[in-house]
Structures are given as structure tokens and as C-alpha cells.
Image (cartoon, rainbow, N blue to C red; front, top):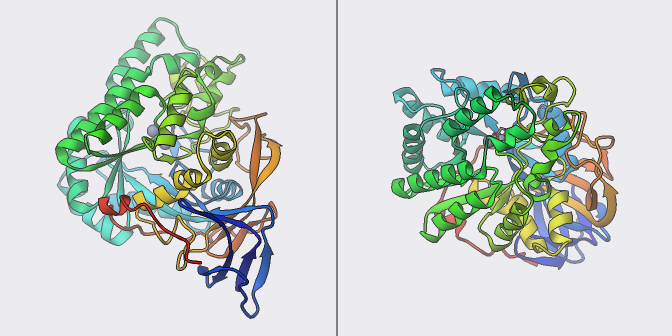
Amino acid sequence: MKKIIKNGTIVTATDTCEAELLIEDGKITQIGSNLSAVGAEIIDAKGCLVFPGGIDPHTHLDMPFGGTVTKDDFESGTIAAAFGGTTTVIDFCLTNKGEPLKKAIQTWHEKAKDKAVIDYSFHLMISEINDNVLKELPQVIEEEGITSFKVFMAYKNVFQADDETLFKTLVTAKELGALVMVHAENGDVIDYLTKKALEEGKTDPIYHALTRPPELEGEATGRAAHFTGLANSQLYVVHVSCAEAAEKIAEARKKGYDVWGETCPQYLVLDQSYLEKPNFEGAKYVWSPPLREKWNQDVLWNALRTGQLQTLGSDQCSFDFKGQKELGRGDFTKIPNGGPIIEDRLTILFSEGVKKGRISLNQFVDITSTRIAKLFGLFPKKGTIAVGADADLVIFDPNIERVISAETHHMAVDYNAFEGMKVTGEPVSVLVRGEFVVRDKQFVGKPGSGQYLKRAKYNVNSQLTQSQTLSI
Ligand code: URP
Ligand code: ZN
Ligand code: ZN
């Protein structure tokens, strides 16, 4: 079915203009004015912005963690993502030491197929580098199109890899054309601090933050960046929460290292004091890295504005308060880490960023979509509005005012981290490959319609292109 989107303002990472879009066979085939096509459905986007669908580079859907499993799976998680204007997610495929990578990837395919309502891809966790892993990795890239590897520097005795593994992963990724992602916190020192806190009877949620101080995120970020420089490789630091880590990324970039940084909505608008909420409610705000002192928010906003941090991920990792977060009553180390953010990622950045003059509208598109597509080998199929690109589009009302609440969100969890927050802007309709998934704020998609995306290899030169103009 052909479609023409009229009367909207088209926004890409570089341009903003009044134009119409013709969609045929899931692709954008014309951008211009007075477009017509026999049999095309006309979609009126009057008063709305039209931008490329968000790409969430950091989700944990249906993931076992902290003695439980995340509440949102590929169905509820991608439905919520779509309501929030996200049309692609890249989820973390966990691996187990000694197990073939293929098996882990198959497990993740099983989780997603028949459920995802938007397109999806996987990053691969690396927990060890040995001959078997080295033999399998080229196939992972060529056959599965998985071109990003994740190494955890924290979560001792669970996910944490040692420095040798991180360094070997960086060297291997350079050879194979993959981007290495790190969770950068010093897991060994955190382990010491948490044990000491428990021994001293400090069991409340706030001690989660106090035992993971920003110095340990800064130290790990700097270490990973040094290794990257030494290996002449490429690095993407996930969920940057504080000045110490943002500074290390900026320093590395100044040296010319190929180092990139992602932050998340929670670090931009919430702070450490939320962990002190009474009646154990602080557990809702337990993330690793933790929420930081409020002044860090300005540092993160400035880093996004000046390009020292380049992307926004949700780090969607949702657990109910009742029955899941509550596992940590009396012992903060047993609170499952993470929160439900997938749905509000774009709105928070738009409302708090664009509307408040902290970033431009074009930066908003770059940070939530275009840059992510380029870093993770999806551009220009995804991440932009251009002839030939997939028609993954968000029709967004930039003026609507609303209040975020668990009562109206679409995630499967029993709370919203931004409960009661007044925001401006909301996706009205969302299309994936030219088909509506959300239409006039109603879900019209189909579980299983999301397609698995094989991604291109990491290429530093394609990160350096600045312009992608609308051909009108
Ligand atoms: O607290 C968090 N961030 N949970 C998700 C797992 C991770 O470390 O990204
Ligand atoms: Zn992490
Ligand atoms: Zn995460």
C-alpha cells in the first residue's frame, strides 16, 4: 500500500523543512511537494514533526538478571518502544562461558521471533576470549550480522570480564570490524565496598549508590579508553552517568581515540536522592551505574550538546516493584538493577532537551536515531529520512502536554520511573517499513512483524560523514 505523508515538518539530523513523503513497498521513494501516486493513502501530519524512527541501542528484554527475569519481553517491550517513537531496538544477547556463541544467539532469536512488533538486532556479550570464541566470532559477524560486542567491567562473579578479556576483545574487534561496548565500573572495588557496607548493617537502597561511587565509573571508563588507544580499536561506553566518566571520554576523543559515549534519560532527569524514598521505594531507582548527585545532569546535557556524548539509550531493564525489586528488602545487593525507560526515551529528550533549549531539534534526531544507525551499521537503511531508506517514521505532536504515569504507559511493569513528570510532546503515529504500528495513539501492529536486522561492520570513516541532505 502506498502512502503519502503531507503537511508535516520533516526533521533529520541535519535538516528541517516542510516536505511530503511518498512511501512505497516499505521504503521512502520520494521527498518533495505536491506528490501524488495512484492509490496512495494520504496521511495528514499537520502541526506535527516527522522524524526517523528512534533506534534504541541498549535494551534488555526477557533477560534473566538478579535472580529474576525482566518483566518486559520482546512483545510488551517493543509495543512500548513503538508508543514512544522507537522503531528499532538492539538488545543484548547474554552468553555463558564455555557455551557456543551460536547457542546463545539462537536463544535470543527464540525470545524475539513471533513477538517483536518493531525491527530488532542483537549485540553479543563477550565473557571470555578463547580459541573456540575466536573461531566463532567471524561467523557471528558474517552470518548473524552482529557487529558489536559487549564487555562488562562490573557485576563481579556474574557478568564481569577481566582486563585481559577486554583487551583481547578490543584487538579482535579491530581485526573483524566490530564495535566494543563496555559497562564501565570497577567491579572489584565495588565488590569490596558492598561487602563492607553489608557487614556494617547498611542495607537500604541508597547504599547501592554509595558503594558504586563515580570515581569507579571514571576509572573504568578511562581504563577502557586507554586499552582502546593501545589496541587502536573502537569503543562505545554505555550508560554514562557522571562527570568523571564523561571527562574520560572527552579526554580520549581529544587524543584522537575512537571512543563514543551513551547516556540514558534517567541520568539526565533523576538523581541519587530518589534512592532515599521511603517504604523501600528507593529500590525503583536502582541502576548500575547509580543515579548521581544532581549537578551531574548539567554535565551530561552539556556533553550531549557539544557532542562529547553522542547517543541516548534506554537501558530498558524492567522489574516490577512488587515481587521483583522487593527481592532486595533488607539487602540492597539483591535489588534487581534496572528500570523501565524504553517508552519515554524520546519524549524525555524532546521535552527536557529540545523544548528547554539544551539541544537542537536536529541534535535530538541525531542522538536518538541517526548516530546510533551509523555506529551500529544500520545507516542509511535506518536512522534517516532519505530516498531509499526504510519508512520508519514518527509523526510527533511537539506541543501536546501530558503527565507520564504507569497508569497510561504500555510497559508491563507496575511503576514508571518518571511518574508525575509533566512533559511536552508525544508520538501520534509510528510506522515501521511503511506500516503503522501505532496509529493515532492506538496500537495497530502485529507481534512477529518485527524483522531481525543483520548489521554492517563498524567503519570509522562512516562515522565522520556530517551531511545527509534531503533531496527535494
Ligand atoms: O542497572 C542496570 N543498568 N541494569 C541493566 C544491566 C546493565 O548493566 O546494563
Ligand atoms: Zn550495564
Ligand atoms: Zn544495560
